[in-house]
Length: 112
Image 1 (tube, rainbow, N blue to C red):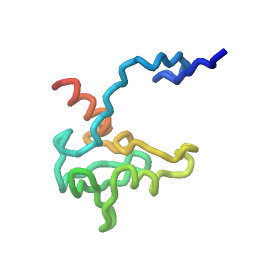
Image 2: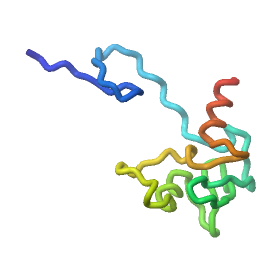
Image 3: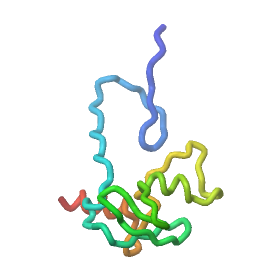
C-alpha cells in the first residue's frame, strides 16, 4: 500500500496533497517603494525601538552600515524573541506610523 503524501496548510493542519492543487503565486520580495517609502524615511525596529533610515529600495542604514530588513532582524533581535529556525520576515518587525511594514504592504495590495 502506497503511503499518501500530505502537506501542512496555513493553519498547520496536515491535509492530503493531491498533487493537482494550484499553488499560490509567491509574493515578490518586499521593496520600500511598494508602500511609498523612499530613501531618507525613518522606520522603527519594534523589538528594540531603534530608529533606522531607508537607504535604498531594499536596504536600511544603521550606524553607517547598510542591511536588508531580514539581516538586521537576524543580527539585532533580542535573544528572548528569537525562534529556533532563525529565519525572519523583516517587514513584520519594522513599523512606520505605528503600522508594520507587512500590514502596510497588505493594505496596499488589497486596495489595488
